[in-house]
Length: 91
Image (cartoon, rainbow, N blue to C red; front, side, top):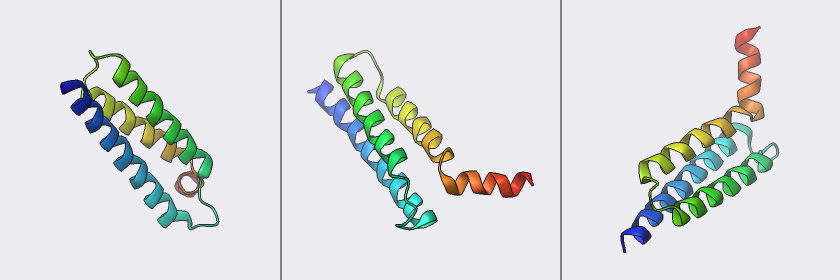
């Protein structure tokens, strides 16, 4: 029961972070320039983390959620709106 509950918590965090990424990118770029590749990479990464959590019981929930949050930030950094903002700030 504990294993299922912990995996469910990680799944909920993955879904919430992915939804937040999708909403933020849609609000920033609109439907025409939506970064579908980054969203796909985020979904695949979440599935891999879920598989690892289910396979290895010694991994903590906070570690999984933190790793996925950092991965979400990394994916967000490599989208066009962020790169354009960095270009504007640097020049």
